[in-house]
Image (cartoon, rainbow, N blue to C red; front, side, top):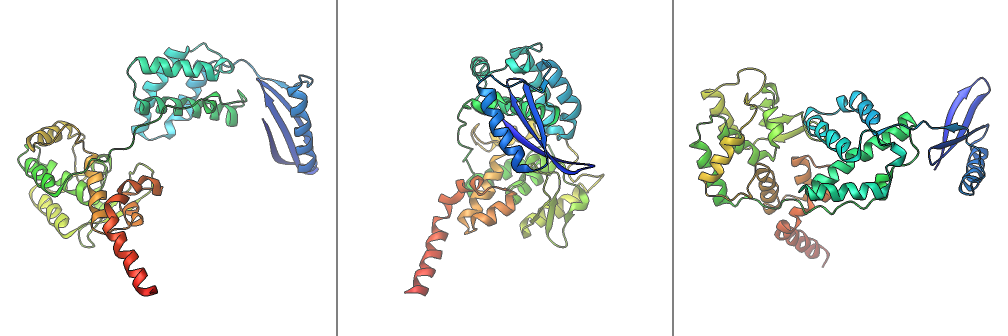
Length: 340
């Protein structure tokens, strides 16, 4: 694996060629990028033939010390909602792979064994993919920033195929049943949270971290700042949603920093779902799919849905495309009438 780094010294711009292979580093400095590339290409051939002399010999770093440094330097930069599960994943990976295992000894074959071991414990494909993503990021940092290893073995392993994302959404009748059950709940904030979730497509974490100052009832908008992809998202509030939030403000009030001061509504939510006669397949995230699905059936474009839900990739909203066929038919009809 060859790379070219640019740096400046007293002689001007210089180009350092670096070739890494099996824990060894071969480097040389050149005045031009072309010379550096040519040397790197030749050196890679010598390395493969076993005729090259390494410039630097990498120490045998262990997985335990790699994850220790990762937890000190990298993990604190992540969101709390990411840090919590990843600390547990680090512990599991150290147990399964061995903290005293050398990084260079973690091969694609060993990672395939890891996948099998996780499957035996009942881990789902999605969970295994998350373990592999964490391990891959560790190797990426160890290669790019620490120069502890030269290759990422995780990239050479075929990951388990994840199931399709949830497509369950609530019908209009089910929405009414759920909202009525939420009204009957002893939890005073549940009804407003669920109503806002369905009308804005917001995630539960976005709603629970919603600041009072980010609810503008005059302009009929709500601003979500603590989002999954860290982007600030401004979503319109419907007339009905404004009325619900105003009623909530009158009866309960916006006391403190957050609109909804509770940290968890899991128990109240599950009780309301059961009371509404809905199945176990209805989770809080179903409200988000409900919003996207009904937007599609109301004629919203996929770009409109992506904007409301805060998706970066259009592939995430294509699951709603089959629900907007009526709207597409109207668009095509208008186009053909104009042309012919």
